[in-house]
Amino acid sequence: MSKKWITLTAVTAISLISLTACTDNTKVKEALEQSLSKQKEMTSYTFEGGTTLSISDGLMKSSNPLTNGLLSLFKESTIDWKGISNLEPLQFQTDLKITPKGSTSPFEIPILIKDNKLYFNMPALNKTADEFYAIDMQQMSQAGKSPLSLDTLKNTSQLSTTLGNLVFSGIDAKWYKEAKDPVKLKDGSSAKSISVELTSKNEKEVNTALQAKLPEFIGTLQNNGLLTAAQAEDFKKTQLNGIQLKAPSKLVVAIDDKGFIRDQTVDINFSLTTDGKSQDNHILLHQTYDAINQASPLTREVPKNAKNFNEILKLIAPAKK
Image (tube, rainbow, N blue to C red):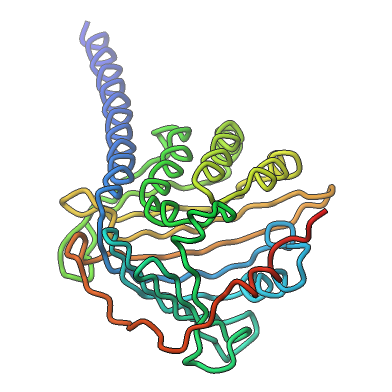
């Protein structure tokens, strides 16, 4: 009789542990999804981050020589940035520092959005450091000739949330983990750390979920002006089934007591098959967010020496067939 009760107790305990683990993982997944949605409430913030890219030609290639030349600077490089973003009115500044692979001499691209105009200095295009190009975003939005518009820029947080939820909703809760100990943020406060890891155990499962979400993912990019209809259609035809996430890959976020993501690291390996050839890619990205909803003023002034970018746009635009 005692053996029977011992066995029943052991089975009950194991069942409770399994049930609790499942419930805890579900709560961890929900916490991450809620933090993604919380990002939509960010109307202003400061940010800082960097990325190391190793991107194949299949993903970053253009038929336009000028565009292709610009893309070649980014696809194998280290990029660092720091800036300020305010939503209403739309104001944004950042300084990109780009170091191409094998180079010890980075070049910088300062960017400013103010009074509905986008200003930037590109060393490959501008003659001096104080010469900027200017794009009238309102005029471009009204003309409807470009996927880039004021609405697109204002909806960045909403778009990020939508895309993030699309990707992570398909991943089983059992792959989500919360660190036992909280992490310290730059301002000294604590945050809980949640991670999702791609391993040999779940690689096939996650890729199946990804493939199911990709058409909607591409459609969302198109609807938000980041892909033209032609680009979206081409992507669906040529690359949709050619993307495969590879282990090891990992996402780690730090969520503060208000529910905002304050620190995130994305380390992702993936392959892309084009024309029957598989090419490996790797992206390592880290970014922090601070001063959320504190309306930090911009520190960069509108450039005095600004040239209209329309002529360069004509060179970058694809040739008419």
